[in-house]
Image 1 (cartoon, rainbow over the protein chains, first blue to last red):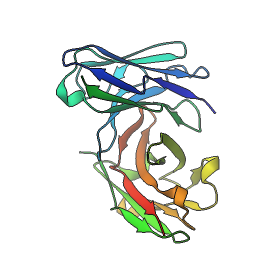
Image 2: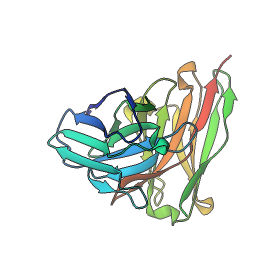
Image 3: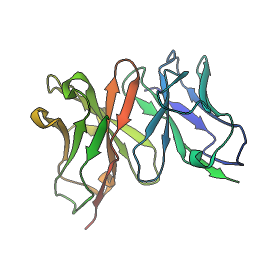
Image 4: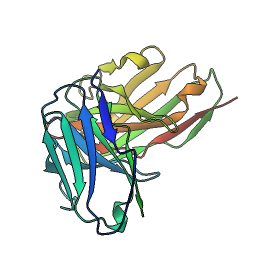
Amino acid sequence: DIQVTQSPSSLLASLGERVTITCQTSQSISNNLNWYQQKPGQAPMLLIYYATSLQTGMTSRFSGQYSGRSFTLTITSLEPEDIANYFCLQHYSAPYTFGAGTKLELK
Amino acid sequence: QIQLVQSGPELKKPGESVKISCKASGYTFTDYAMHWVKQAPGKGLKWMGWINTYTGKPTYADDFKGRFVFSLEASASTANLQISNLKNEDTATYFCARRSSRIGFDYWGQGVMVTVSS
């Protein structure tokens, strides 16, 4: 199985701050990784697909990059509505596996 | 708009069975596979498997073979997950998620909390 290591597990940030979350995979998955935002009691929402593509309708504050087995999600300027949990998902090969999640909170 | 609406929370005793549903709307149901994901309290997400909504063929991840059954009511654009002989460790939120060949997992249901307690 492909392991996905996500960091940090929690993050305190201020409004307007730039935030970066990282997922590292145990083997190469090309760009087959998506990023999601999840708020309590709600369905996860797709932010970035295939590592770098912004999902339709999502704010351009979110962006994704990757290099080799390392993937990053960046929020350029934190807004109140960005306070949520974030996780990554590799869909390169089954069993599909997830990062453990990052809880983003306001400082 | 595309929606996956799941059934309500369930409280069950060990040994009982539960069936939860995921009703799709806003797209052609049989054009996209439906996947199931488990999130136990305080734990990460775990992929359970998927069902081909065109053929009805299910595929289960190794940890979900035996007591877990994926099924369809295609005429109702609904995917179901049934868990039999419930155990305490089945206590979790269960999500359905649509998989697009172009994007990956794009739309998710809101999740169903299943609590197993004597």
